[in-house]
Structures are given as C-alpha cells and as structure tokens.
Length: 298
Image: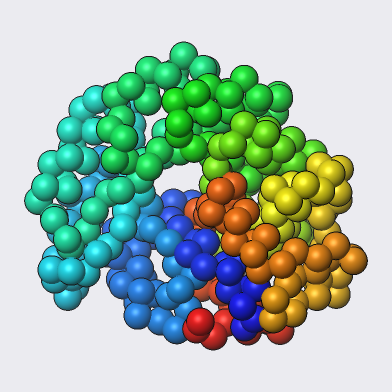
C-alpha cells in the first residue's frame, strides 16, 4: 500500500462491534478486537467503542484474554443520561486498569450549545471529547460552541434505515463548518464501504437497501476542504461511486484530476478528520484490498 494511502487510513477505524447492525456480544467484540490488534491490518485500527454502562462487562470479557500489563487497549466510551455518574465510573475503570486498558475518549450526543458547554464543564480535559450534533439544519452554532470549549465534533453518517443517512450536501456543510471553526471531527455509522454505494443496510436476509456513504469519500472530501478546495467540490466527491476515478500514487491520492499529497492528507487527518466508528473492521479492510490498493502493513 502506498505511503499516501497509509497516511490517510492509519488508525482510522474505531471498532464498534457491540452496536447495530453487527450487535455482537461483549465476548465476541472483545475477541474480535484482540484479533484485529494482532493482524497485519492493525495499523488501521483505532479504539474499541464501549458504552460506559458496559465497562464492567468489558472487564469480565477481557479477563479471558491475555490482556496483561502494557497491553494498552484504548477505549472510547459512550455515556448515558447521568454524565456526572458515568464520568465517575470512567475514572474508577481507569484507576483499576492502569496500563492494561484506558478510556481516553468520550462521545456525547448533544443538541444545544448550552448542553455542549454544560457537559464540557464536567468532562476532564484529559478525556478527548466528541460531541455528536444533528446536521439536518446548519450546525454552525453547535460547532462554534464546540470550538469555544476546545472539544471535537461527531457526525452520524448512517444507520440501519435509509432515513438515517444525511445527504452529501449536509455532510459537506458539516465538514466545512468544522474546518472554518478549527474543530476536528469523527464520523459514525454507515461507513462500511470505501466508496458510495447501494447496499443492504443490515446483515439480515430481508434487509432494506439504501445508498451508503463511503469512508474514502468522507475523508478525502475533508482533505479537500482542509486544503482550500471549494466545498462544492467536496460535495461532488462525496457522491463519487466509481473506483476508477481514484488514482493512488506513492506520494499522493488523486480524484478526477485533483491531487492530495501525503503531507496534505496527514495534516487533514491530524487537524480535521480523525476517525470513524464501524461495527465491522474486517469489511472496510477487505474492500480496500478489493479495490486493488492492498492492505499490507506500513
């Protein structure tokens, strides 16, 4: 795999196997995460996503594996309604599991600027914090609030029903708002495939189908915006479904004549588009390989 593509994909996939449509048991999700950490594709793996309410369950499942001192599992925790109590649970978990596993990130769903300010005041600075905001309407005022408290944003890019998927225009607008405010973001849901496509939305035999956004579309669109390209062009890229439109070189990734260098991709990943949550790690990895880009180590 080229240096440019590894720069784009490194640590990109946060594993959310506990969540639909996979909805695995804790034991299955922990076993999978452990195997991915030992795989040749481990460099693409980010954090394990666990609800705060299930951290005790995670500890029990993890005890069955060789997760000894220095294992360094990184966990992103999703709190429930009582944020103060759940932050206390996170602190207790981290104190019990020093060096073995640590919650270093939290993802909080909010809908108001006041909610962002209030939640941020409770969350310690040591926890990297993502606020998931709605994007049907212009989220600029919410992104502004996130910038004010020095946190990060999160966009839901899909789900198990067609109406859960925002439009390309809404995603492009969200990316542009984050970029203009200097706010890094992550995405979650619906990004199992590299490029935009029509696929079943769950793993059930009678699953409805729908148009799903691609993770290459989203992260390359973010790189375009970060590096000064028009938002309208990023929206066009978000609608791209032809693998032949991409050209991957050792030091760049190009789309229909617009080229992004390794340095430009690295800057975008570092300062704007951080990662995405997926209930599958194997599916995105396999489909990158099917595109002919490979999946080797770097």
